[in-house]
Image 1 (tube, rainbow, N blue to C red):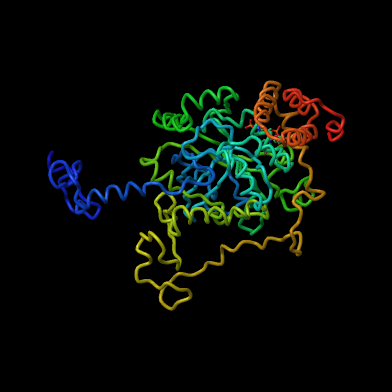
Image 2 (cartoon, rainbow, N blue to C red):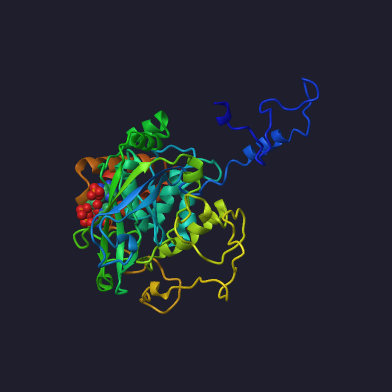
Length: 497
Ligand code: NDP
């Protein structure tokens, strides 16, 4: 029994005998500088935190398996989808967006839904949310938008004034605001919500033909949400409730599952689509672009160490595989830069060597050195290309078809110019034809509660401007919110509808 025990050592491996008492001159001190072990312990402790993510700081992760259930080979040549029953390991990280690492899970917020598929042809990251749309459609606006979801620079408090000021000045936010203010803004658990790739991506088949695609993960546990007051109560009762729910379910072997589905749009249909098919504030209606079954994802393993796998996990829409690619979606294009950039800042240039991020299959290139290079750094192999010594080559059979674009003129185009300025039809549909009466009532209550927090000299201006957006989406919605806020509806608001 004794032989099986492991000796206590310094991090350099020296066995040592005293873990709890510092070396002192006499029993009452002072402490000797030569008690190096004390320095080592404290110095490491002082460095335990890495920068928390600026967005999506509070998260929960799990491993699982994705299995192909339907044949989509006519649309994509991705090896993962080449046969029914093909499967691969996945890692998922769920998160809230605006709160800090210690914030409550049941805040009203979109939820991150980031999946890493470890495929034979590379890691594919589908870095989505629990909503099919987003607040903005141009990535240049992201930092401003996120500032409004964080803390007021003076009070250090969350500020409904900043939020509604921003949303009211950016009408393209309305669709996502409506979803956020519905009970889907406070999901009961990560298991009970859908995930959406949200962006328009593309698929490329064996004939090198590209088709536009959107990805949907539909929960097989059923949608379940908190009402506004239930979510508020849960924030006090158990701020880590969604983390606990996932760990406990998987520990009990109640493995949550999602069905992966896609919507497809040919380039020809894209040209005639009522909206810009690459606009992240719009969905593609199901009746025109029906969901096509693809596969099932099951989560079945909580990582053994939270920091190692969840905190250090790094997803990037830049990580695609052959047969799946990007689109002109401006927000997607922006994220191709910003995600890997954020990981290089948080984790270093070699973040893809960390086990949770590492591709378990072949990786060959000429990148060398950098902080925390721990994979042998290419040994004595050549570190330049082309060279006369190794056998690494670029395989042109993976080439994608060229992406044909609509224009050859560079400019700062107005994102909301005529033709791109319908911010109201889809949120109107959501309210009018999708929500039940009960959901409508809760959505209105949630909006009124949130907008009641708008304060200061611009209160009236902000509220009136936002009311006009609600009126334009749906008159009954506008009237109900105005009534809830005690605002007298004047004809200018109704005329804007
Ligand atoms: P459908 O009537 O065919 O389906 C409605 C969709 O809305 C379903 O996917 C449903 O998800 C989802 N949904 C229900 N309640 C909410 C909510 N409070 N917040 C967000 N999504 C919700 O829809 P259409 O395709 O004709 O589009 C109508 C509206 O539905 C859109 O304007 C959009 O707001 C919303 N929607 C559309 C999606 C799409 O990809 N077309 C995706 C999600 C929402 P579920 O089936 O899982 O319950």
